[in-house]
Length: 256
Image (cartoon, rainbow, N blue to C red; front, side, top):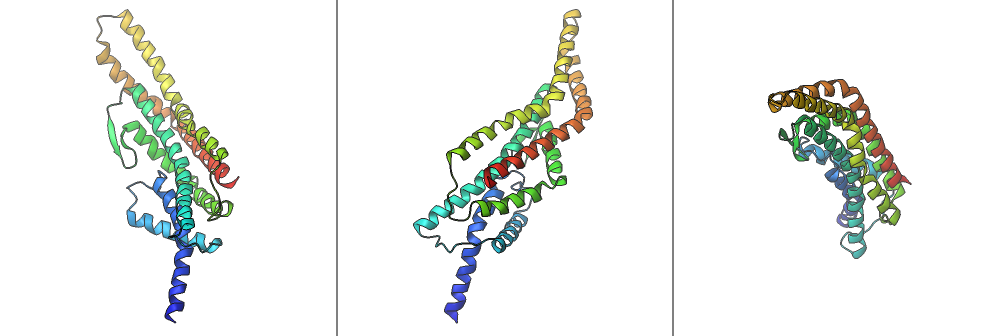
């Protein structure tokens, strides 16, 4: 009876440990699910609930984790979760790059705030990060990501090969999105402030005795906030486009 119960416990352990590795690696490296604002206990509960749900949906091979094959599968599951998390991380980094560009244009590069995931970031980058989180949640991004995570177990079953040259090419190509999306999000504010800077240059040339620094800095900050307020709908649409592209990239790498 004792042997039977021990064998049953081992089966339960093996059925949970493999999906748990992939889920926890994804949540550890994904920017939105690894923030310190979410209590560690809550993250552990979410990971266990997801793992239990996934384990009921797929067939899990019985692989001993202390064998050579088991260690290979351990690294494989962690790497798959890491890859998925990095796709999300690049999307978040693009939004932070946009905030840094806007802060630099407004002259607020030195005005930093503590971000739980990225450390010291300009205040505008913090604002964009909050906006991106709201857009992600309101569009059901968490449900889309969890659905792709479940499908990844069917596309890349536990123990199956994952890495390929095509995957490496897709990852390198996706990394360029950090700058492309960041530029697109920041473009309305940066272009407008560029023209404000040009105008201040003409004022400085026509009135050399004017202290342009005492006039220009408040003008740049006020103009920046005014343009930022007017451009919020456009910025939200571009952030949403960035998340949609990240979901498409996840599907392309995990499901094709």
